[in-house]
Structure formats: structure tokens, C-alpha cells
Amino acid sequence: MSQAAASDVDSAAPPAAKVGLFTLTSMVVGSMVGAGVFSLPGRFAEETGVAGALIAWAIAGTGMLTLAFVFQSLAVRRPDL
Image (cartoon, rainbow, N blue to C red):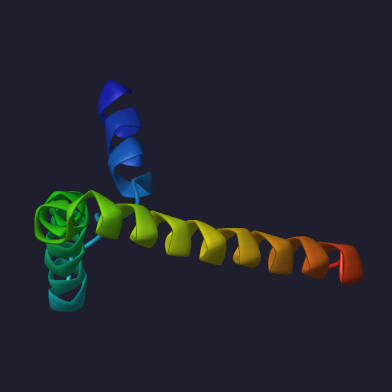
């Protein structure tokens, strides 16, 4: 009886997922871009100094605030989305 139960479990198990070339390539590219994101601020600060870094943060912050307002306006106008 235990052999029958074991064979039922084996046949009910889903097949293992296979990783293709596209998935592997995407993972490698994603890890390279992710690593660059962490090294970029330090290199940028070395090249531009304090003033350049502050200007860049102000521009990025203004852009993110604008994007937040766009999403807030969209949520008010179209709450079904």
C-alpha cells in the first residue's frame, strides 16, 4: 500500500520549470544594471562635487514629485484603473 501511495505522489507532482536562454540573459542583464545603480551615485559625486550632487538630487526630487502628482490625479479621475 505504501508503494501505491508513493507512486501517486510522484505522478501528481508538476514538472520542473526549465530556465531558457532568454530568462538567463535577462537575469544577467538585470544583475549588471542593478550593480551599476549602487555604484553610480559615488562616481557621480566624485566627478561633480557637492554642488552637482545637490542639483541632481533637486532635479530628481522634482521629477518624482511631479510623477506622484500625476498618479494622484489619475487615481482621482479614474479610480477604476
